Image 1 (cartoon, rainbow, N blue to C red):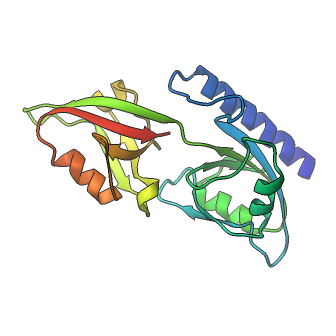
Image 2: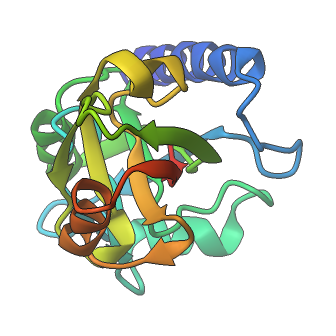
Length: 201
């Protein structure tokens, strides 16, 4: 079963990499690929070593890494570019891309864990707020901490045409960083004119 889970994880990893290769917005490199595979053993009555932001129903985002845990040990010994870091997303666990809740639950059980992780890809998107009050086409939800940004739940219209995607994280507006609520207010209260969104996907 462990071999099957690893094979599924590797297949999903390859699909993720192909998707990244097709994206002109990807800022990955050979040393730091957009997606990477992590393999650790989770013992009974222990923790894998991660805490998460769970505002995105599809992907948990790493908030912290505990010392002397399987993930911390992996980071100290793994190949370059495959360290798990705060802000990275968990795409699947043992080849299954369940909901965020299900993936975190799987990480709490004992056994071999094959995680496909994704480092954030940075981009800047230009929108225009019209005098007419026309909507930007952004539907957002606040993350639990400043570093996780403002989650894009769905998009339409201008935002979709500009390349904003569901599950993107808005981390700054017109170069200004802040808490999720501060970012939200910068967007909705900004007067008409150009608007730059700095996002992680």
